[in-house]
Amino acid sequence: MPVEWDALETLVTDGGQVSPREIAAEHDRHVDSVRRALKRIPELVESEYGSVSLRSNHVAEMVHDAVQEARDATRRAVEAGAKAIEAAERGIDETTSALVAWCAKHGVDVDDRQEARVMFRLQGVENVEKRLKEAYRLWTEAGKDPARFRSAQVDLGERGKSAAWRWL
Image (cartoon, rainbow, N blue to C red; front, side):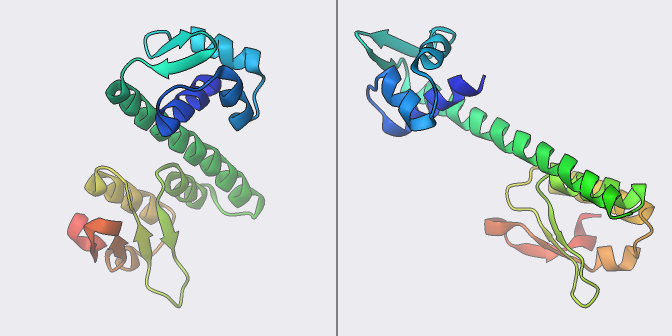
């Protein structure tokens, strides 16, 4: 469904009407692919005389947000797979590899250099408590020091910072 995503993204960000050709050019797609994609989402778009517009800006923005979340989830899943493969190739054991993959999947950035305090960056992560409890389980299964995890700093972006132990 990526062509539909591209079309909706253009329509939401550009507003008003655009042609299928403009959508195709913006996303390096073939114009026929764009036309077929638009025909698959008639409940969201209205086509008329070589131009396309949104049926409802509100609904389109909600769909666009959902599409962006899906893209982000897909990106995180691909990164998780790549990091797990990289960890395996470096000879990291399976439990540590599971922790690395989990962090990538959930968009959790972990800085675990021995000379630094452990930092979990969870900007935009939903259900922080559940995520950190799962991370703690994987951390301890990987044989890492539980005290280091509990003393880690949790960066929630605009929501502030706290200590990991508060979430466990």
